[in-house]
Length: 131
Image (cartoon, rainbow, N blue to C red; front, side, top):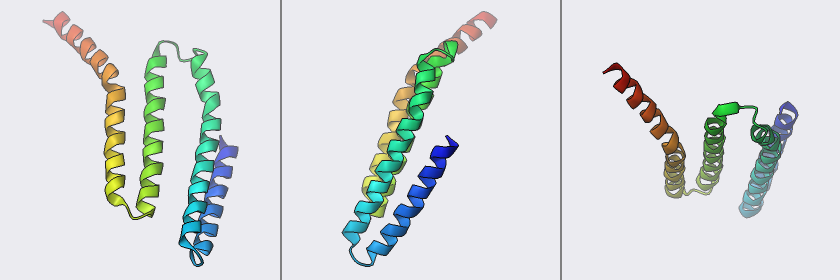
């Protein structure tokens, strides 16, 4: 991943620098450049994550694969939410950004409900054994 991280950082710095220079001339084009940089960074991340997902499908996690899958999905939701709110705030739409943040938090909660239910079941069984 370190090679990809260098690419992502370089792309981010170039996107910000070019966006700042173009912003002096036309703000709309600067936004398009920043958005394109974000999309390319997200694309690099997806391609990099493909190897991890293939390993997960291969079963190297054993019984904890369900937990890892929820964790990876929650991380994806968090990253997508963060990216989207950043773009919304760059455009001056903090109200929309707050709505997206709330939706992301709810989505992560919905992803975790099966795990929470399972943990509560374990706790219930432990309590019934002690009683």
